[in-house]
Image (cartoon, rainbow, N blue to C red; front, side, top):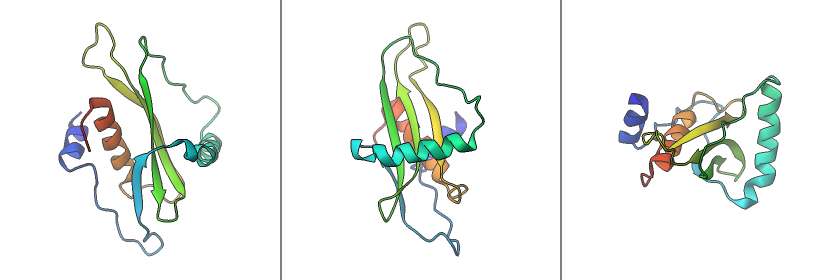
Amino acid sequence: MALIRRLLKKGGKPPLPQSANRQEELSVREGVINDLPALAELYALAGAKISGNSRKPAKAEQQGDCFCLVVENKNGELVGFAQGKTYQREGLPACSGELYRLYLRSGYEGMGLEQQLIAASARKILSIPA
């Protein structure tokens, strides 16, 4: 929780390191219906990296709103995503959602994108405007 608070205080946007092979603009945004083909490709890549025993998200007791955040490069290509769900559980008022998937294409790790996706997901779950 301390990490989430720190990321939210900083705006969830740590500076991207300048590297010789990675000097492109990347942005985190809400996924839209037109992203489905590219998301399917990312799912396939993620599935190939994970062994067959990947955990499926636990079903919430109450209905909730699913969300998908994507990382897009300057060419409009998706290079990562995060998925989660917001909900309210009886008997557990402090629990208002979960982040259950996060994936970045190879070569995009360690650039601060993971933190941006986690912070954006936390804002979504906690209903904090960006």
